[in-house]
Image 1 (cartoon, rainbow, N blue to C red):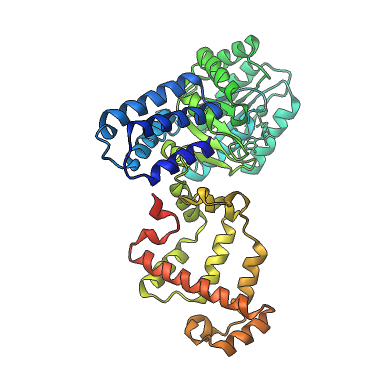
Image 2 (cartoon, helix red, strand yellow):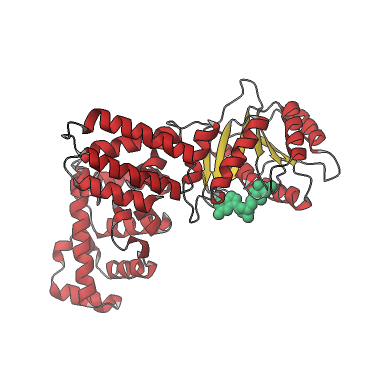
Length: 439
Ligand code: GDP
Ligand code: MG
């Protein structure tokens, strides 16, 4: 989705004023971009109509308002299409809250059940019970049991000989008895929608009276995901959508369309195979990411999670007191390295995704190791007071760390820039962050 749209946005962003012709061209690009990304035609029409009306009606005819206005309208409308606000799990007033996963085979239902259990445990110390309702493949039950063991969550199953409806009935009784606060029901899927499956799911729904029926869809299935979502919604009345496999090279089109077609909010996204690869869905952030404005909030959140809070506080104090030194510098390097693939993080910084050659950009862990080696070859006095680093000291450090003087010089220069940025940030000047000035 993003390439075309980003180009069009970029062109517009550089213009001071917007004419009606600009809006027309922009709308054409947006239409194409959305269609290319597998967004449902009806959704595209609706979306471009809304943007055009707002853009032409208000800001553009006087041709005085900046291009930023249009970017803002597109962003707002896209956010609206994606669902406007973050919607969490609908809780039952009385325990247990019952959540049923439905979807095609391989969509990621079982994996998501595990991820959701983990999420509920982490965020609210929940005591969920999982029910193995996919009896058609023995491996499906084992898969859920393995997840249950990893999470220390009980899994209720009765093998493959009992009907899923009966399993759910007994599983629900057990949850009431054990006072579990959540029941997660894993169900079977088929390769295609089929009536027998829908009947079975309807019966399970009848018995379990779920608070949530979450449709799990694979982002990679594109346009087909929309049809699937429509039939599941018609038959069962889904209450929310989970989009999995957004970690791959997938386009966001399905996400855009499903929300619009079913009216059910997207609640979570799956971004990998691990239990922790789950994100609460934020429409506004997704919109920004699609529009290439970067996903600053996700970036900040990720940084916060991985950043030892106390260290961050110390760093903030140092920034204020202007005592950021080489010791902090390597600590920072370590923290950045522990946050995961750097290039992923960098792409979330506004503007970065448009930087030429960003696709090929890779951060080399060896390079980080080399930097660390250089700093470690400094004496403590030098680390705390980089002004001491005269040419002879630099030569000694180069030899000590097995690097050239050029590399040592480069690192010192980089450190000084980093220091400068820290100082500016501590004064509240966010423009010091690369890309921020483009927002
Ligand atoms: P189910 O048939 O709907 O229960 O699907 P599963 O939970 O068994 O998942 C099918 C496959 O997709 C498994 O190999 C999972 O590891 C994988 N999978 C599930 N969610 C994600 C995700 O968010 N990202 C990636 N990359 N793989 C996923
Ligand atoms: Mg499964």
